[in-house]
Length: 492
Image (tube, rainbow, N blue to C red):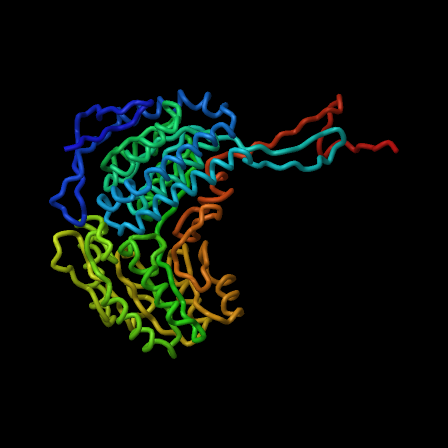
C-alpha cells in the first residue's frame, strides 16, 4: 500500500506523531487508495516556521518571475491532466469528464494568475498639493493558511494557492482528509515546477484540534477557507485580527419563466442538480417554475432523470458517481425522509441503490413550499425540489427567502425578466439561460449573506483576497506641506 507524506520546507516527511489514516474509493469502499499522515500541532508549527522563513525572499522575488513558476505549474498540470483526473475520480467519485474539468480549471487559474505577475495593479491619482505624487501598490499579507474542501480537489486549491503565491505570500495548504491524495499530487507538481522550499507546505490533518491550531497560530496572517457555513462561523470566531476569507454554502434557485426554452431549462436542472452528485456549493437544489409550465416540466424532467446511470465515475456509461462517504449518504437520505414528512411529493429517487459504494438515486420533490427544510437547508446531494409561482416577482421573493446567496439562475426570453433577476436576486452570481455552475477564472466568484463574508476569488478580486493595499505619497516640494491645512498659491 502506498504511503503518502506531508510536505514541509521542501521535503516529504511523516507526521511527527506517527499517526496515519486510510482513504477508500467511494465507489468501492473495499478499495483502499493509500495511507496518509495525520498531522499534529508539531507538524503545523514546523510548516508555519518554514513558510515564515521563506516569506522575505519569496515576497522580494519579482512578481513576473513568480509568474513564470506558475506557468510551469500550468504546463505540468496539462501534461498530467488525464492521470490527475482519473486519480480524482477514484478518490472523490465525480465522473471522469467532470474530473477533467476540475483539473482544467486548475490549469486555467494557474495561467491567469501567472499573467497577474505582470500586473498586480495599483493606481495613481493627483495630489491636492503641488509637487507631490500619490499612488497605491499591492503588498503580500504574509503566511496564508488555505483550507480547502473535497468536492473540487484541484480547482479550489488552485484558486487560492495560485493567487496567494503570485501576490508574494507563502502558504500552508490543508486539504480535506477525504481527498488527501489529490492534494499530494498537486503539491508534487508545484515542487517539480520549482516553487522554492518553504513557499508551499502541505499538512493533512483530521479533527478540530488540528484545524483550530492552524487558524489561531500567531504567525499566520491570513486564512482562506471554503467549506461548511458552521465551520466558517467557527473560524471567524477564533481567528482574531487576521485576514479571513470565507466561501461557504448556498441554497441556489433556478427560475423558469413561461417564455423559457424548456428543453434548455431541463438540461440546466439536470446539470445543476445532479452534476458532481449534487455536491457543489453552486448546486441547483431549488427549481422555481411558473405554474403554467409545472406539469410539462415535471414530465420532461422525470423522463430524463430516470435515464441517468449510476456507477463508477471511471466508466464512460456513468452519469452520476457516488457521494463522498457514508456519512454523506446518510445525510442525503435523511433529507428525503424530512421532505416526505413535511408533505412534499416525491417524484423519483429517494433511495440508496443496491450498489457497493456510497451511491444515492437522483431525487426530485415537487409541490414543495418555500419554508420546508428541503427548500431552506443545504443538502449537498442529488436532490432538488420544485415549487410553482404566479409571476417573476414571486419567483424572486422565493429565491431570496433563504439565509444564503451564492448563485441564482433564470431561464427566460424576456429581457425585462432577465434584468429584474440581475437587479433583485440577492446572490453574488446570476446566470441568464444557463445553469448554476460554470465559474470562469478571470471573473470574481463568491456570494452574499451567509454564503461568504464579502471576499471574492478569481480575477483581479482574487488578488485582493491575498494582498494589502499600501498608499504611497512622494513629496518633492522640499518643504513641509500639511494636507487640509496649507493654502497653497500656484504661481502663474
